[in-house]
Length: 547
Ligand code: GLA
Image (tube, rainbow, N blue to C red; front, top):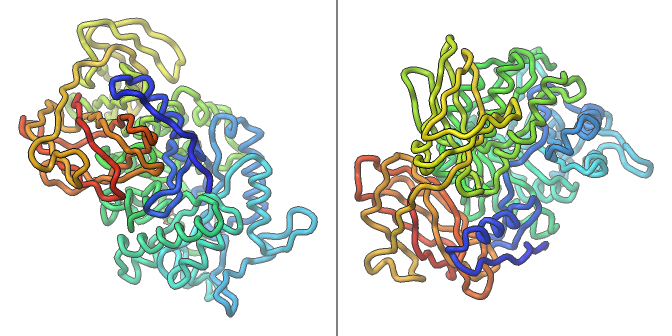
């Protein structure tokens, strides 16, 4: 197993060091052996490309090789896109008498000398040879989603139910780095997703332990069973991302086994809205509003820019879905804007939250970034008319008595310094995306109360916590002297718990801090925050500070 580089912070108050530590920990590939047995990594949201939106179930080796090549040649790989993921359609559901997956040798031939046709390790080697990572797809039930009677009996049972350990070990042995686990079969059989996905998590953990190879784990049950409340610690082992909504493009029509699916702007907005669960999104664990449709038929260039802005402000996975071999220059520029990508990939991993609404459809969203005093800000106009939208620094915790500098991320231009607020004209169904830099407003600190608050006990409670906003940013100071991340469950005012990972702070009892967002009762100055420490002993929560 690979080990994460050791990182430490001397003192909680040395915020710069804390942030540096978080950055080290979030380098893709940095990982540790977890007490929950999965190889835990807390990277930024994944970036890459997935086959489904453009190729549906016609995917084969030629398509994947072309897309991997294009990703390197067109500069997307350099911009941070890494994963090339093969969605449904790669497998026709046949198994040999030993239950092993049998792969269509024509669709997946030998690529390099000495390779056997029908071995998925071939395409993985090809993807890796381009410096990229490879992803694969299965279903937690018996069948995937593309089972249509008219496709004939061959296109059946493309799910892993009954073969979890065998299949996930096979994926890891083939060399895949990422697996998306769908829910069509599970849904049809009325299985319990929290139960099945926990079993999958255990199978993945076993495959990782057997091969030393990490499989990024993507859950796809469309948000039907509130996965944000259980996926971050499903079965004691975290999933990395979980879908929060249905498909961003309409399902394929039976008989129509090809691409050409039409994206729509309302579809993009709807998936964005359903993906907002900031209380569940912490560094390493992300809500997934679906693979993107940036640059696909059905969206204008401006709408694609808004789409990219929405995914970035919500720290969503950036998995492009358009055919990378035919991207227009405008689409490529949208997908590779480094400043917008940096917002998505910020090491705090926090989701943007809506901080102001003006009448119907004029909204201000803000995402806290890892540099103190910085916020990404999205001014979204959902209406059919141009409108001015004003953003007030105080709305997202910046000190509003000093000047704040503003930069436009799509124009790539500094706009100057402004006192207390900034107004911008936003076109109909469009958005402006800014970075603002000022100084942090005051944080209120709390220490644990009551008998439960004894450091090192399994529960830590903070009472009389006040916030004037519903979604409040919270800094948690803690010590985790073990070498693996520890998990705690947070309940605010008795709401459904959310799981939070606390990375190691090193073996010398030095303290660290993470930032999260929590749902508060806006009216109350008496919020109660209860942390239950659910993994191995050794995690101490010292204090919290609220924006
Ligand atoms: C579901 C998923 C899609 C895609 C298809 C494959 O609809 O939500 O993202 O994986 O299945 O059939």
